[in-house]
Length: 384
Image 1 (spheres, rainbow, N blue to C red):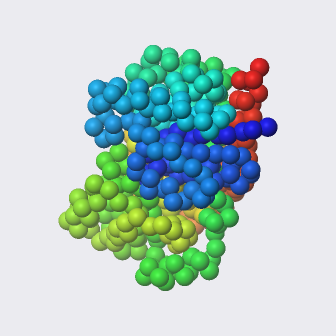
Image 2 (image 1 turned 60 degrees about the vertical axis):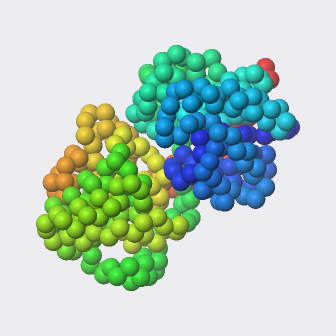
Image 3 (image 1 turned 90 degrees about the horizontal axis):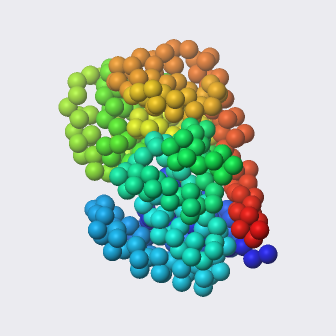
């Protein structure tokens, strides 16, 4: 039976949702399913797609300006181009991933009689004014056939905030390559030597875009609060806040070692040499970075600001002792870090639990093939 899944996303720039689209698309293609991607610019991650996965460039959102007027100017030609593309390529399932680009794809798919699945990529019920307007209208209940959540917390949000019946929700995972991100003492030793880190150093890691919502400043201040040169904070990522954060790290008093490594194409060695991942972002969720850290055998320390973020953090661990939760203050994070290293036996158990959790519940080897069943269910439902 002909099966052609089309992923529609705002851009293929560097981000968690974009990485998921690329990785899932490659897996589907390897499994013999026809797959394509519709995205606006930039296409930074497009080069990671398999060569025979077509990317159709259609601007679906005005970008950083977030202008409602510009969006309305874009939406009608975007719908027309999407309808033409869906029909020409005989698309059988449309999979949307971000609210910013979802609406024109939903409308075009409806016009073509194609079932739609929409991923809830982030925790936090409303991420923007546009998303609020989109979901308050309940258009999604008319235009979307199925919804995909990646945590139990997100599944509850879809039910309670988006008013979607449980029968129309699937719960999956963004998946992680547990073979590539696997604990390896040899790789760990080589990576520590390469980056000038001794066997006795205690390495904290942040992997994030250096944007305000990631709250990396909290990790920098926590490293300074430790006031102990045995601790090293590595910051992987780039963005508008890098200059300010580097200056802050230089200006803050205390005995600290903080290194900004920028964007790295291969992060596996960094995970291998590190001891604890610091997750300081607002509305923490089970993202790519957390899963890669866990697969590498690294416990995660999640910062929370309120009751909702505490529940999100608890949901990340899903009753598995694979890390800790601390209040989002430098002092509380520093105290928790010291406690984790003080109990080496418990820290070793957390490393093992993190790895086992990633392998058993989030490995791409099981997660991605299961998506084909969800697509098949959508096709069967639409045909009947």
